[in-house]
Image (cartoon, rainbow, N blue to C red; front, side):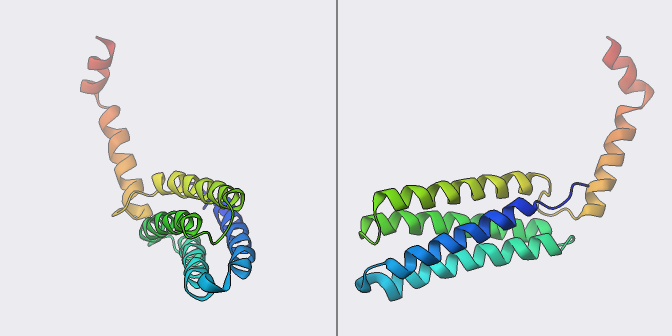
Length: 143
């Protein structure tokens, strides 16, 4: 079994830091509604990734939730440009970080299909190996 993806945690902290800086500079008109929403979403992603890192049995569930929260965050980032909460340049910086983090979450998620805990994955892998090593499978492979 692969080690949890710690780089996701590092990147999520970096995104959280950048969002905090941006949220502090959002014009007063949107600071307390939109800025709070951005902070909340990044904190949600970070929390879910920490839970996924700590929990082996519920990792797939937390990763799925983190992926959904990342989608919400990306939509909120797009909204920020529409309401002129920050510049297009700052948006592209935040978007790049969010996109990288989303890709890493997706890669980590592939290792843990939802509905399977590590024990179920190991059993499925052993069953597949035994099926592939049967004489019938070997004779079909040589044809």
